[in-house]
Every structure is written in C-alpha cells, then in structure tokens.
Amino acid sequence: MTRLARVALPALLVASLLSQAACLRRSVDDPDVIVVDVWTGPNNLDPRIGTDEISQKVGQLIFSSLMTLDDRLQVVPQLAERLDHPDPLTYVITLRHGVTFHDGRELTSTDVAATFQAFLDPAFLSPRKGAYRLLRSVEAVDRYTVRFRLSEPFGSFPINLVMPIVPAWAGEDFRGRLIGTGPYRFVRFLVDDRIELEAYPDYFGGAPRNAGLVLRIVPDEVMRALELRTGAADLVINDLQPDVVHALQRDRNLHVVEAPGVDYNYIGLNLRDPVLQDVRVRRALAHAVDVDAIVNHLRRGLAQPAAGLLPPLSWAHAHDMPGFVHDLERAGQLLDGAGYPDPDGPGPLPRLRLTLKASTNEYYRIQATVLQEQLRRAGIALDIRTYEFATLYADVLSGNFQMYTLQWAGGAVADPDILRRVFHSTQTPPAGFNRGHYSNPTVDALLDRAGAAPDPDQRRELFAEAQRVIASEVPYVSLWHRRNVAVARHTLAGVRLSPTADFLFLKDVERLSMPAAAP
Image 1 (cartoon, helix red, strand yellow):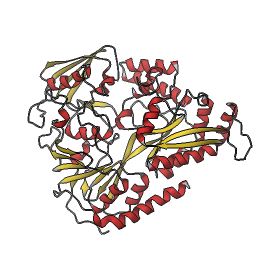
Image 2 (cartoon, one colour):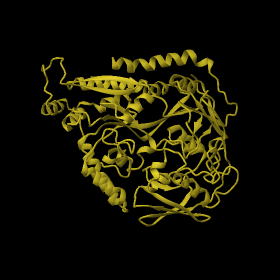
Image 3 (cartoon, one colour):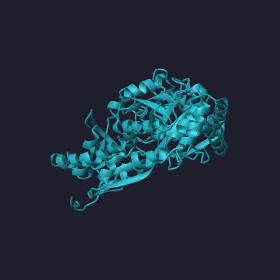
Image 4 (cartoon, helix red, strand yellow):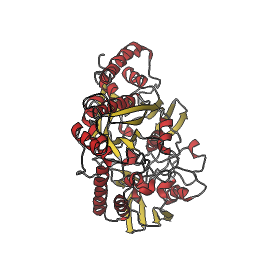
C-alpha cells in the first residue's frame, strides 16, 4: 500500500496540472518582480517577536542581522564589522559605517542597543526572550560600538547576535510600519494572500537584481505546483514534497536546484514510558527502522540519513557517533533481552505494541505508515494516530505521547547549544525542549562545560562527546536531514540555496530574456 501511495501521487498531480493549467495566469504585471509561492503566511513580522519559519524568512529580506551564519553554520559578521570577546563576560560589536534604514537614516549603536534592550524589559513579551537569559546589559559605547555583558560565561552567546536590528524608535506597533536595513522595503501584507516588497537600491550589500518580490500564500501543494508550471509563480523553496518535485523535474520550463540542508526529522520517545525507559527497546527501534529505504524511495534521495540532531555541515558535528544499521536480527535480540520475546516465532503476533503520533501532512502520514511496516517486521505493532499540526504540537509540549515524529528546522539546529536545550535534564518543558525527559548526568556535565568553554576546539570536543553518549542512548530515533530544494522557472538565474534555506539569496535572482521552452 505504501508503494502504491508513493507512485500514485505524481500521476494524479501531473493529470491535475495538465487539466487545470490553462486557468492560471500570473497576477503581477512587472516581469522584474519575482513571485515566490509559500505555504503559509507570517505570524508576526516584528523580528523581535515572530519565531515561525516564514516570519523569520521574510524578516531576512526586510531587516539585516548583527551577525549571520556561514555555510558551516559558524557565526560571522553582517551588520557588524567585527566581534571582539575581551573577557569571558563581555562581547563588543563594532558596526559597519554608512548602513542606512529604508527611511535614509544611518544605523547606529543606539538602534542595536535598543533592539536587544527590549529582551531585558520585563514588560516586553516575546518567545525570543529565553535566549537572552544570561544577558545582563547592552550599552551603546559610541556611535559604532556596542558592548554586551553577560551574567556568566556562555560560549554560545554569539548565535544570539544573529538577530535582525530594528530602529531605536520601534514600539509595540512596529509590525504595522516596518523599516529595516535589508535589501527590500516592506510595501504591504494582505493576510492569507500576499506580502509585497520592493527593492531597496541603497542596501549595503548591493542593490537587488530584481525590482521586488511578491510572496504569495498558497496553502495547497498541488496549486503551488500548478502555478509553477503555468508561470503564475516563479519559484517555490522547500515547499514541495519529493514526489511533487520528481513530477516537476520533467517540465522543461522549470529547473530544480538542490543543496545540503540542516532540517532534522526524527522519532521522539517518551522516556517516562515504562516500555521506552529501557535503552534496549530504544536501540531495537533504531535497528528496526530502515532509514536508507525511507531516504532512497520515500524521499527520492532528497535527504541524508541522520546520526544525530546536529547536521554534518555543522562545525560541531561528531562524525564518529555510534550508528544503528538496519538489522532485524539484532533488534530481535535486544527485545529478547528486554523481556519481549516473540510469542509465536514467524507468526503474526507482536512482541509489543507502541503508539506513534504524526502530522496529517500527506508526506508525514505516508512516512508513518512506512515506519509501521518496518517495525512490524521486527515484531513491534505500531498504532498510528494523526493530528493537525497544532494539536500534535500541543500534545508533544505537554508530554502526551509515547512516540511522535517531528522536524527541527533551519536555524534551530544551527548552533550546538541546541543539544543543551533538547537533552539537558533541566530543560524539560516549559524551560526547554527536552520533551522526552531524557536524563544523564554525564551528558548534563558535558553540555554545561561546553556552554562555558571559551575555546572553540574545547567546545567542539565536549559537544562531540555529548553527541556520542546521546546517540548510544537513543532518546531520539534519528531519521534524516533534508536536502534543500528550489523549483524555479527556467528563465530565472541566481537561485542559490544556503544550508538553512534562508531567503536572502532572492536579492540576487533575476529574470533572463529568453523564449519559453515548448511544453
């Protein structure tokens, strides 16, 4: 059944595209404006508050951050010219000169200090505030110098400087009059319809190669694919499932761009559950899952098998973590040792039963069915329960699960401090993201030392050792890291994907003058 579901989707999609294509037309007259389809709209375009993926990606276009991430996920300057660390509790930023906001005013240290001081204001409400728990003060030293003081050493603090800077005057109503220093000016946001941006010619990184962007909100995946085929949309970034990408690759009017990504898909386990408390059961699950089959067939190669939360692109990734190859015999031996013998040999009766919660999203529903079949072959009966994302996420946050599948996305896994937020015993909700209540004093000590260590090499080794221990104890069953994929009209040039699939590259996208290919 799973194979049929995988094969049927492209056939149905192509038929739908062919039958409906004639009724879709481009809604933007200016050919120098690039139309990008996205699956959902932003929750809050004030970058101090909005933490959902699309809010952050739109923010990358309107605003610029003090620091940014390079292709190895290391923190490097953006608005900053230099970052100094004169003592364990102090970081000093020297700003670029001549960077202007969209109203023509120069960005100064006052704007930077005000942006971060908001997180120290008890009256300011933002889900980002927890990241600045160790920030004691922010001071504008002179026009281009900002000093940050911490309450205790924290080696991962620079990742928190990857923060869009807003004008010093920005108040609670800022999202209604957005002004930044990014490559695009905000024009308007029509809820559930579109976000319109125009090119800012004085952008410090160079004027955009297009006149502007329209980010169209198109929740239906087939409609996004249709709009690409007809030219109603120019580009879709990471918002098409592998089967849909495979179908669109045959269209000569389109081209597909791929690059290694960082998104991490996994099975979360509740370690308070009596069955899953036993590490032998968790290791049996890891051996029972055939990740290669999922990557090669269900993901159509648009992923890389994962050994842990940090992607191989990360400077702190441990390349020698213990792996769990697909091995049903070993899984059976582990279950025997855990007290779950096979009750009828090759017969149909299971060794044990588990429940997996998953999203109703088509891909993740099918993946759950594949996992169900793989675990069945190891003697584990899996009950699948699917929910709309909001319900699923609420259950995960409250600990109302035995097993679940979710995905860590983009910048969330960019800094290795995410290991502390996810696996340290003090980081159970609401303090952090340790939703499965994993606890290991050795891991806690390693992560505490890594967070305080000033030397990058020392931090790398401490994080690596923590990853090795975590991998061996399987609080997560790692599945895959996504490959980033953009599908674009063949007349577009400049489509380049970063590891976090940020939207900043859109400033370099331009339309070529060439005739459309024959259908």
